[in-house]
Length: 239
Image 1 (tube, rainbow, N blue to C red):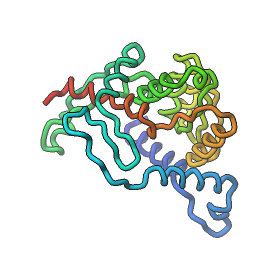
Image 2: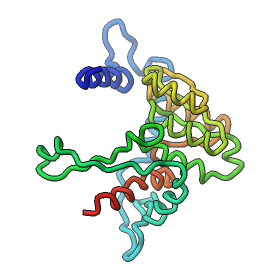
Image 3: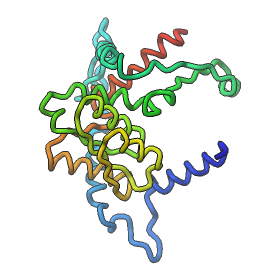
Image 4: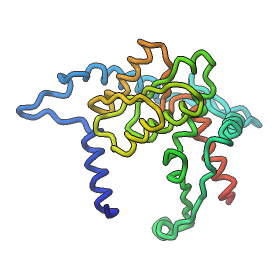
């Protein structure tokens, strides 16, 4: 499809998968629909974990590690360690200048081409580092995740490379190429109605079975893995 057609299709998909339908005549309110309760509980848990917190700055002379309230910050040493673990797993993608964006921005613009990464996004970095850091018995039990596509593929491939099983909850409206790719990487895909419902279902599955939930961003190992993109950018575009 043309770029304009692709953008229209993407907007339609996002509106269908992520927007909360408004209550209207002849339609049940969102709160009364099956699974809405679980989705609200999952949303409240996520909100509780990400309330604004008072920052305690890192110690002088350190590598950036510190705390924001009760949350441990990820320092450069953790990102460097993740990079070593990912050497044989991910590609060092190029950084390319963009003349099209440089004009409106009023200065040089560089694009980090993680679309050329394995699975088509940077998500494999954090997913692999998180699963690789699990204890042997945790990894043997398998992992679970929730995603509309990119994180799903990252978890599926990482689990395959590390010899563990992955169950991924995805919304029924997920793009078919991402859905099929997740299955081809060896994950067991479970479809649910909406993106919110995927998180609730994955959380419930983790509690019921005891497997580890691989969150798309809320864990130091995931953050360290994704942060390896930043190390590459610093080397490729030092100025």
